[in-house]
Length: 67
Image 1 (cartoon, rainbow, N blue to C red):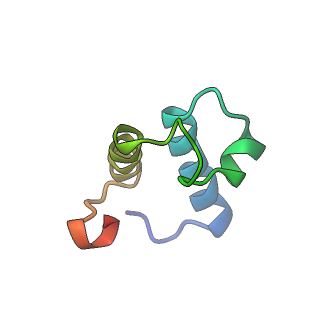
Image 2 (cartoon, rainbow, N blue to C red; image 1 turned 120 degrees about the horizontal axis):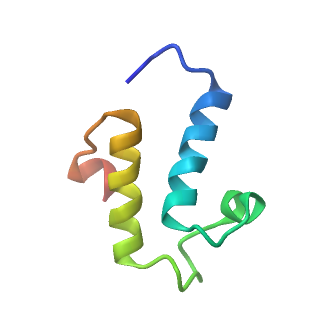
């Protein structure tokens, strides 16, 4: 992962990850999104989001990180 990213760049890349997993949500909706009370955010969406984030940032999140 590049360590020279600004906070804004990281936020935009994370938002892109959320867009990929929840494509019908607006950016404002994505920023306010939470797992609780959201029928779209099931276990498959969680795994998809983790995978997309790992690919976007070229990282591997261990089980303790995502538990």
